[in-house]
Image 1 (tube, rainbow, N blue to C red):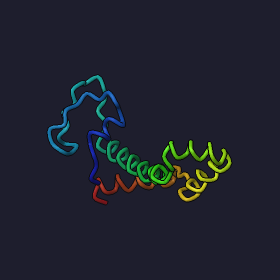
Image 2 (spheres, rainbow, N blue to C red):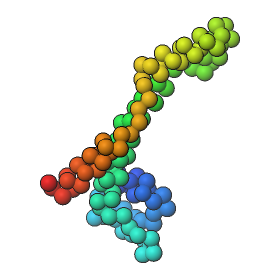
Image 3 (cartoon, rainbow, N blue to C red):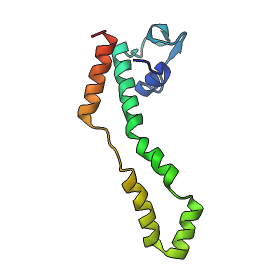
Length: 120
């Protein structure tokens, strides 16, 4: 699995004391022996979780592109009323329904990430 090791470690521990001297797990220099360094397994599982979260959040990006600008929304409210505005917003929400992470999908992706790491 190819992933951003810095983002992954910081997602595990935002205050992680490390230096990355290359581009993979073996290139991490941990700077504080009192803070446990995440294992490579923990890193690939967190990376799988972060990738899944990005996929799930795609609906938010799609909605943001489709919503009218705030100025247009306020103008619609002023000229057509709240109900017309709600209908406009609801059309976009229906077009791009809210997505949530499914625990069973997340666990399967983490399992696959570990299998890929171990060459299974």
